[in-house]
Length: 64
Image 1 (cartoon, rainbow, N blue to C red):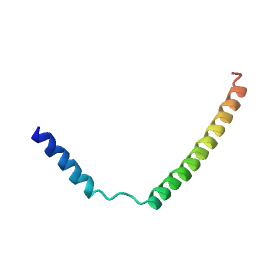
Image 2: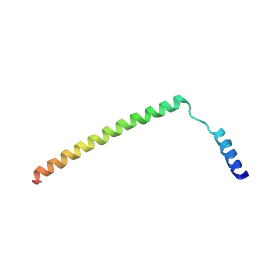
Image 3: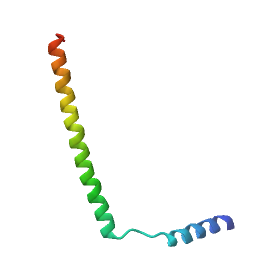
Image 4: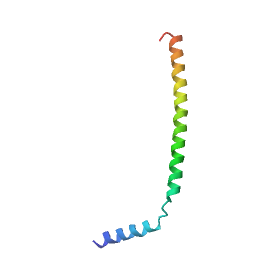
């Protein structure tokens, strides 16, 4: 039982050492992730569209 208390005390001590991010830092990081997600989805969408058009052209050429 003492080891369990010691473990929880150590966990509590470690949590006190953590530097928690400020609200502004969280907002900035969230905005950055959202912007990057939009750009990556557009990038993938453009290549998907180009690849599907390429496959469509190949299928008309080879009679697929």
